[in-house]
Amino acid sequence: MPTKEEVLAKIKNLDGASRFLGKWEINELPKLLWEDEEIMRLSDGMYNQGLGLVVATNRRIIFINKGLLSCQVEDFAYNKISSIQCNQGVILGTLIIYSAGNRACIDNMEKKAAQYFADYIRAKISQNEQKTVPTQSQNNSDDTISQLERLAKLKEQGLLTDEEFAKQKAKLLG
Image (tube, rainbow, N blue to C red; front, side, top):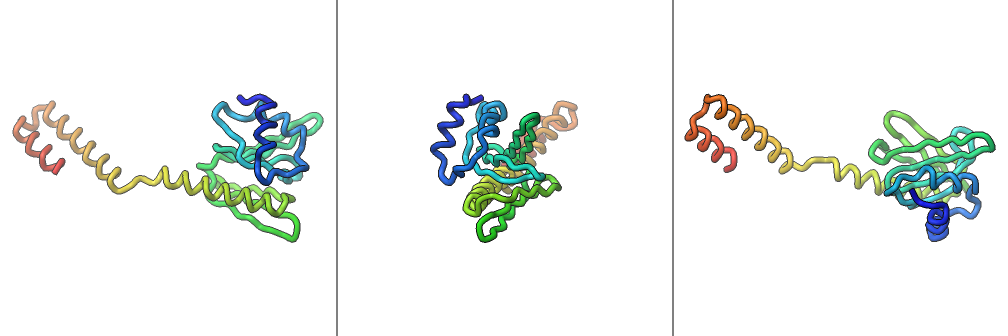
């Protein structure tokens, strides 16, 4: 987990970070961030009628609303986000996150910050999709391996001779 000083140093160096960020929420960040998690974007906004801090990390989006007696935290993993929408008014913007069948609306964000967040999140979603879509060669390789395993079992059970096994193996491997 990063220290408060590390979090503050990172925030200070972020492009587009709002100057009106909540101090209480920033103090909560070191407790909420995972060991390998890095802050990438930061803005203030409103979620579920609570004014707080929206944080985009390299792993997820976190909304923090720290009050006197409570702390509301909601997070959205990038691999669960299906799409993101950015609506912009004259001064303020709204992010709408569609995640695992839910719709989360973070509004009253600075217009520029909302667009900045949306662009970053779209890029993360795109990266995740590229990692999870198997290529045709991966599918073929998996299929070949499973067929070879079945042949080996048939040979072990005595249903194929060494010669038949070698012939079928050669045919599979081309």
